[in-house]
Length: 148
Image (cartoon, rainbow, N blue to C red; front, side, top):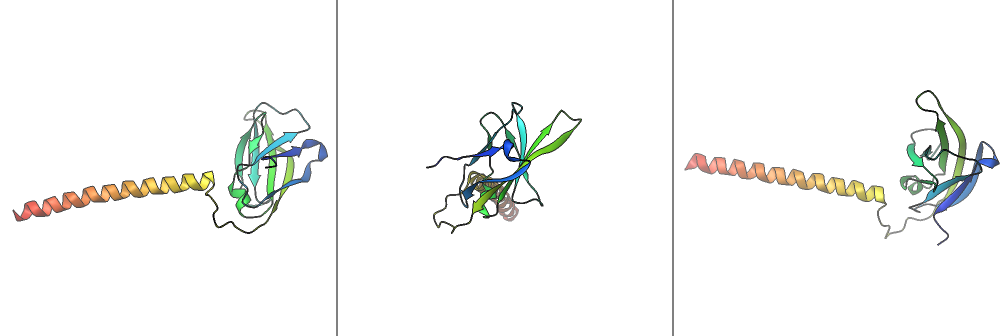
């Protein structure tokens, strides 16, 4: 394995293309180099210059690239967003990481985000079924009591 960290250099200009990842990669991280950053900083990650993006927190070891942005095969855009408290904030750098499209694996394991979504859905379904069973038992008991 070649590692799961892609380096984003601040010395190559405000906006640049850097490295690549493959579609369906997961657990990838970005590491910003070339300038001193605060101990904790904000990064916005998305699949394009328009639409929505996800805010992630970066630190000395870098930041997580959300798995869902590697599923589409579209390039991943990363914006370094720095601010001084509540008074101001601005986008400082922009990188584009090429995502190389490839065929979807048939045995693709769910990403952590997909797994969490599935677990939440299953828990909701189980609690709904349990509530329905309790309700059905109560209704059945009421009907039996009415005929006795």
